Amino acid sequence: MSHWKFQNPVEIRFGSGCLRTVEEMLPDAGSLLLVTTAGGRRRPAVKDLIDRLAPERLVMIDDVEPNPTLQRLEEQIGRLVDLDVRVVVAVGGGS
Image (cartoon, rainbow, N blue to C red; front, top):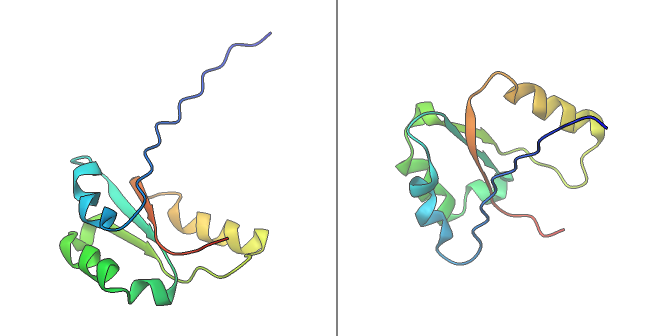
């Protein structure tokens, strides 16, 4: 039997006002990936988060589409491969 290790440090915050706590989750280095839709980007709480973060620390995918194909997901992943993303914030969705 081969040996392996799996580490998945995940923290999920959900609910009203949780976007106001994002900065306390960010490490000193690295970027935050914000995943949303174009409509989600226009929400006041999301606009506030974008304004609070330093532009050089924010990576955004705001063209999420419903039920994306595998090809579309691979394209999105390709945009992120060389970035030092440490935190992912996903806003919106429902399915």
